[in-house]
Image (cartoon, rainbow, N blue to C red; front, side, top):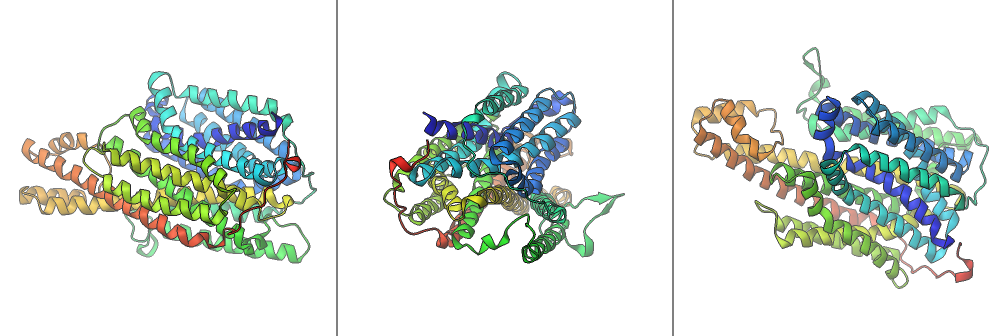
Length: 537
């Protein structure tokens, strides 16, 4: 029993960490009403949760080395549970922001790297591969189940119960953490503060710039922020481009400082020489691409299901459910295949299936998206992600000695956040851009009166917002359009949403295809099986 009790405990913590990033998205309108706040404030809270994790993930990994991995795991779990309790009891948006976006995020940066490192400490050989496959399956299941759980609990109970459940789960995790073996002793390491500041600032600006690209635009400014009515777009360039440029500069300085620290005989925050390891570099790149695809898929599909088809949170979660089932199933299929196939073969098979599933999803796009083809596409996408999840954790961790697994765990957290941010930003930009273009073309080619076309063109010059298709007719009538013209405009907008979804799915195909280029460094040999007596537990 002890053999798998460790991964059960770590998996429970992993489920909560990942679930928290998806469950709130379907509850925004309810939370806004309960706390008497705004959608913009909630979007800021969601964004800042990601920023908190991205900014100090490397520091969290280093603290795991200094304190000991199990201690960091327990401390992080307690901090996380404290933040969840504050969120559950939050009387206003300020308390929710502090509890969820800040305190929970700080707890997560200690827990996530420790999970990866502790699996390496507690398992070896095929048992380790199985443990990482379980963690990967748990992560995918949490991503897919988040909207379903959030929708059900919010609809029939209260969104607060989700965070109460998180407190209970993390309390159980802390209670049973004593069964986890911490085989790597703590190290008395001095943490370089300038390195922490450089990495935090660079990652925050990079992630924030990516997330805001769908609003501000990548290069050409769309709706940049304003100060006293003056748009902030230096030299006519979107703030997104400037933030990413500054972030790249800061991260470059960070890398230079890490090398200087090593040359001076001082401990770096991150041993950047690890990036010269081909296996690790490929594993992290494929991991980032996997999370980019997952985030893109979980952005565009719910948006279409809710905004165009008018499904509620629970119905949306049910439509996504086939992906969750297949992801869990094929995580274990990938583990079984690893006894016969090399990690590269399994990963590339998953990547090829992912490309095919994106093509199937593109073919399924229709006015109602209720075809069997869509379900098949979601199931095959989940199977592909499951095969990837079964391999990447072990590929990354087995590429370095045991004393560096905390750092790799931190890097995995960084690449997961960067991949998720990039996927959301890219697919969001493609979706909104395609919607604007298709809507404008539809209006020009319609039978609407010329004066109506001119009015619509003027009002949508800065882009078209994603709004429920069912509300377009009311908005149009309030703007002075006749009932007939408003109905025509609704049809044009609905068709534009369908067209933009097709373009977004094509973008997903491109990302999935390009990810094949990253897998060349994945090991091409079948790992030797570890004798049963040598396995942990």
